[in-house]
Length: 79
Image (tube, rainbow, N blue to C red; front, side):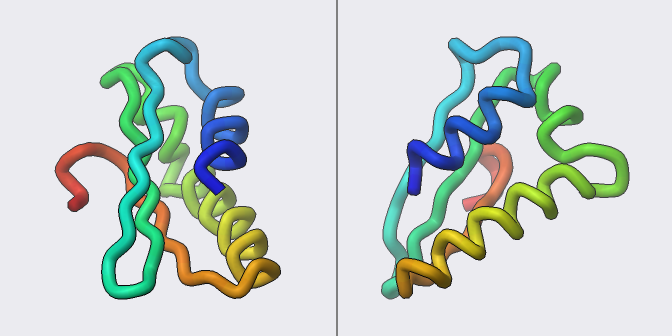
């Protein structure tokens, strides 16, 4: 799960070294948080949030197929 999200997002950002995916479990739901360089957040979110919505849709399909609950967040402030 974490590797799939890293693969998708790493192809969107310039500074791949700064990209991190934090994973935690909260009440049976996996929470994946994307942490990137400040300059790359715009590329991850996209215009009107379209890129991150697409990423969340892809991850949701993966989660449904594996019978798990998943939330994808962006940035350290979204805990």
